Length: 226
Image (cartoon, rainbow, N blue to C red; front, side, top):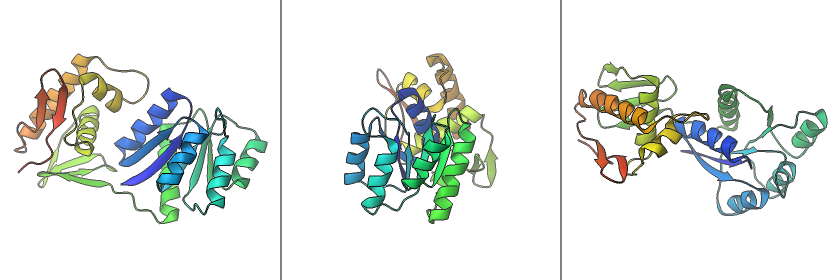
């Protein structure tokens, strides 16, 4: 999977962007300040950096400059509320490839991310397989053999999240926060209704009981199925 480093000190904003990127097939590390970001860059490699400009300690332009001086070549996107031309100039002079100001449409962010990765030659995987299912994350379609599985938008998002995290247990509240992007979190009952409908659809493809309810703990998609 494509790895992204997201540097943003606003926790709600960081979680929103992280959730959307994860739903579209990216692996995301989150850093809330510059020092944490630099530590991530020392121990890991990333295909894309998304930086806020104003951070509690080291600003985004300095992080970008240090990354470029150290030989870092992956694309860098500034995602910031700083709209002045002086900040944009500083951002690009530090080595950034793109600059998106807040507030923004999450769809535009995803388009810019994919464009940057395409120009850098990084391939974004858009198809996943699970059992008899082929999941196209770009078209948001699920094929069961040659038949299209009809899923509501949140059922698709739920399936995608569970497939990407096979074997992990999530409470209803955790699923709600991960699948329902934005700041409106559903009730646990709404999550359970979505899971119930998804289970019925999976059963129609011969995938019975692949979503396990671990009483007192939460829900899990089994890692393997026949």
